[in-house]
Amino acid sequence: MNKIRKAVIPAAGFGTRFLPQTKAMPKEMLPIVDKPVIQYVVEELVDAGITDIILVTGYHKRTIEDHFDAANLDLIENLRLGGEKKQPLLEQVENISRMANFVYVRQKGPYGNGTPLLNVRHLIGSDEAFIYTWSDDFILASPSRFKQMIAIYEKYGCSVLGSVKAVKDEDYDRYGFAGGKQIAEGLIDANVIIEKPGKQKAPSDLANVSGFIFTPDIFSYLDQAFERLKEGEELYYNDALKLMLADGKRVLAAQIKGGKYYDTGNKLEYMKTVVELALEHPDINGLFRDFLKDLKL
Image (spheres, rainbow, N blue to C red):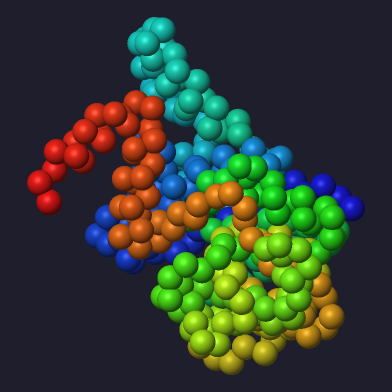
């Protein structure tokens, strides 16, 4: 079994929920205090041993490429002139481009979260499992979400869906849910996957929210799903997973233990994330906490 070394992040969307802010700046670059959302995702991948990160982007996402590129000479020189005081900042910006090998692919094909996978098939190959994860949500856990998922993959050798327990009724209308036999605490051997089932029809309370390990055979099932598309329909990775299950392929839904899920895909959840992580930020946590206490709400 090959080690998982590659990850794919789709980042071609327009971020319309955040307009007008995202008219010129990708939603993935929205800051959580002083770090863009997508960097949290990348850092978690690198911490789990990922060396090659493939970002599927659009024409309007050049800022992401610039962020993970080497810093420009003017910025480097400015920080160097700042001496010892600016040294930590210099190290931070220089380390960003060194975290991993970054590859950029322009998305083409039908709408839907299955299309980015077809766009990167030639980079993944036919014998490697890989991580597929979103660019605007993450889970802070110890061990990390991806380390937990990789451990499950190495034990069972099949696709793994990162999941969290649904806590609100509306969660059942936002995420996909897997059902099947529970083979360990928080681990389901899936036989069905239902998108946004509603609480009454959900096959379990495990929401497949963020981060997946796919075996390379998902590509052939994506081909089948693509061939069945009718004009105007979107291509979803779930369509391929359902075909895999129907064909007897094993897919596990794994609850991420000891962590908290952060979804920055809409204004309210983004602001909650900013506030919560600002309260933990070493540079401002005390002052920011005092500010919130003094607010007259």
